[in-house]
Image (cartoon, rainbow, N blue to C red; front, side):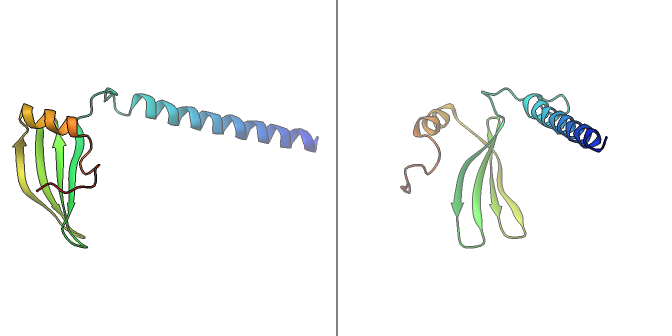
Length: 108
């Protein structure tokens, strides 16, 4: 009688954990709120990061075909320039070069 209640408890626990895992997988797979991002096309991207000193860095963020230059500090964020349009030639050059800073060389 005592063994039967422990077995039921363990089976119920395994069942609930399986449901939680299934729900987490579904949320990751299909998104939340009906917004589904196609796997091949992301709207947001980090183009380049330039550390200025120990506390500040410049970040170039891309949203669709527009880039924004942001200065990040320890407690502040400042938009340096917004609405930078990406030209098709610059987009092709950036995609051909790969991720920013991947080769470890600074561009002059």
